[in-house]
Length: 400
Picture 1 (cartoon, rainbow, N blue to C red):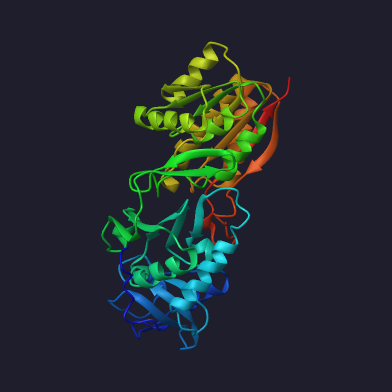
Picture 2 (cartoon, one colour):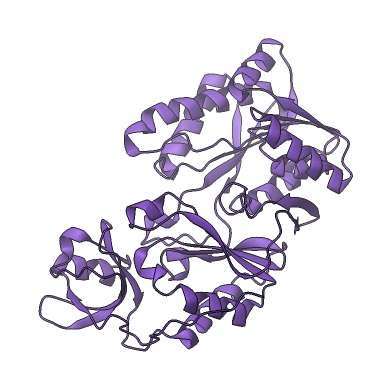
């Protein structure tokens, strides 16, 4: 196994630096948001790391991760002057893991950054393996301590650092994938409820799979019409299609990537499913073709990629979401279920629901809202930190 190197400093102020912030910056912490931006930091320091933070009068208000090249200059880590050492990290990781004990899966997010009061740290579990991301320069200085604490608390067979996220560029950090502990294979078989699938920690999207939709995939399997005909749009590796296949007579899984569909077929074989048709197609074109042919499906899933990459693109994104939801409602059999979602952070929940209402009105059908969907307990959404919430969805039905 790879050796763990311990950071030479394990105290609460590794750099010995104290930074003052403006009244507005201090107020953000009081109101529950952990970020203080560059414009509200009154002192300068060239070094990343853990720093003490005071208000303009010099009163201590907490310890923060300092990123000198980032617009988000300070991220609150500890409100007291307690030492942020390996014991501290073990306690925080233990608390985060305890909040996930009821999850019926062995692939889920163990640490969700700000949502678990561990800003810029992401840790995902895939069976006995962990995949982590350190997404700020301040956190990077504590890498060895974090890895050691993860090993001690979670006892993984291996830890992979997927530090290839583009956000690290804005922090002045390199982008690379590094094995930090033990061994991590190219492919890992994991379980989600009764469904099994293969994750790809080294090469897959995000950290190896899309873990955030786990509770909504389980919901799709629950609401799928037994013995019915199902359609999974933007299927990728078939994560939704697998849950649909367990209840449906047949499933059509659509994606533009032949490689993704091939992986989906591997996942289907792993579960013994032979009722999924893996179809290479653009979902927009396919939905229009189904509508022209007056085709009907008892269950439809829409899980598209993020259409809005910035606030400026929200109007265009909403038009795209409205288009696919309108077509899906028109091909949905009476009494069936449409499971629809958006992972665009910039499309807020009220906008998403208003878009669904417009699509329902334009469909000419009576549409019922059966259930609202969101993020699971492994992706906690903090009300005072809107950046922690991005995934929203709904289950809709049409009346005869």
